[in-house]
Image (cartoon, rainbow, N blue to C red):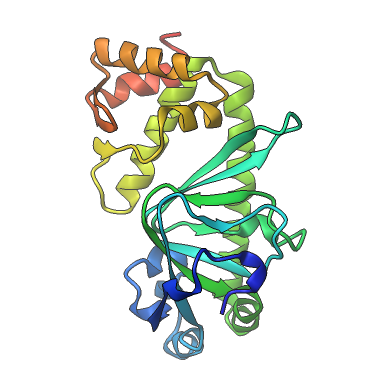
Length: 250
């Protein structure tokens, strides 16, 4: 079960059915079942998780909450925010199906951000103590956990680079191409997708004003790089966006 400090929106949202890694259609993205031997897979199936539904705009966990679980996103989309010194919230991450939330709490023992559903979503709540116990018996799972934590560190460094060294057009092009790549890895179209976040949330993540984000979207549209219909995006020229990202068209 989830720790009370994680403050799930409604305890009634837990599904009565339990989830096993071996029967989950996201297992190759979440836990490396393909690397497990038959005996290791039996051990891994001792981890049976609760499935939690999080409705749009509800908080999965808050900054300062006691860390006890990781959350594998089964469906939906989330944003993570941190409070700045001026008491404003800044978006620090967008997360989608197949990704794991809560890694920020492993070291300090408490979560460092608020994580909120941008649409109706489902997650598997994975008690970290149980995960460590099982990982102790499965070396490949230990390696996978280390890789996940390493990716989180790389992601944080990438965000710092994004905000520190790129101009506004490069930042937006990078975000669009990053979303395209992540969706493609999950079997979705890399060129046509719907943005779950608002322009304002994108601006918060990129360190840009709302007006700037809207202006660049219009510019990209006029230049034939993308087609924009409200939140629906169609990438028409991914190579062109890549050139913008690299600064070639700045």
